[in-house]
Amino acid sequence: MKHIEISTSSLPYNVNIVGYTKNYDANFNETSNILHYPTLLEFHHDDSPTATSSFVNSGASQVYWKLGITLHDVDYARKFLQSKQVHVGDALQFEDIGYVCHLKDPNDFCIELLQHDFEQKFKAKTNTSDKKLPKDKFPLGYPCCIGQITLQANDIDKTQRFYRDLLGMKLLSIQEVPKFGFTLYFFAWTHENPPQSDIKDATINREWLWKRPYTTIEIRHFHSSRQIPPFRDLKQNEIGFEGIRIMCNDLNMFIGKMKANSIPFGESNGTYGKEIVIRDPDNVPIYVSQNKSER
Image (tube, rainbow, N blue to C red; front, top):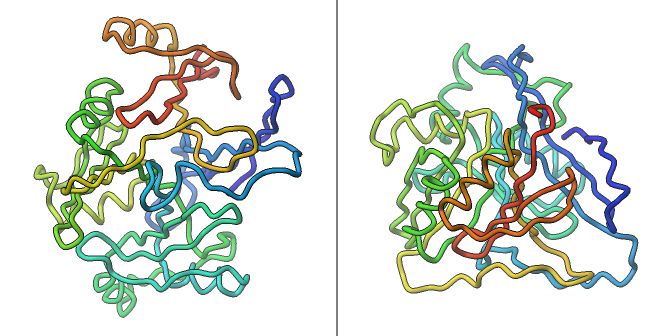
């Protein structure tokens, strides 16, 4: 990832921003279609030595689960990370979802590496002239994309209405995992449509989705009465997930829409100046900032 310079001297904490800022074609060559609105990771921290090791809002049983990074070859990336003394779990084909492995960052946040192709399809490609070799300019051998921000929801109907109807995201895929008792829902801001109109399709749509150059909001919903604790705001010196920021081309118009839909919101000063904060059905903060390039 590339470090993005930003001045936040007016805030009572330090901000560091990183992300993948370029787009690549199927042969991993940089394209002129630069991603104007890449997904970035925003880290807030201060210099206090008393930060607790307690982890808030984050984990497999919490409202925020993981960050997904999509790429061409999971095994190559896994071996490289292991060579740097990073502990990475075993890679496996998880049901008919994808070929994945997991690791944790220094703060214990979960990261999933998700391969573009299913395991068997990828192996078949490596035995043909279609095999793509790693390039030295990419630390993990191939271009990467922040493919998923994975949240967990208690009421999937309310959650769908929030992300689809209120925020205008498109539901691209529904992936049922009956063996483990949950279903995955993938939302994105895009004009694209999956190859198959059936968004539950597993034969083509899922591998197509893992190759998209943009980020999806992935929602996991358990079929049982299992309850996920709602998001709670971090206290001073706690470590954890703080929410999602979206950049809006017209913040005043967005505020008007929230008022028209009787959606409560707060106003504050954040990383990009003026922002409003709305909450999803599980209380996850959505920080909405003005996209300055569109002013």
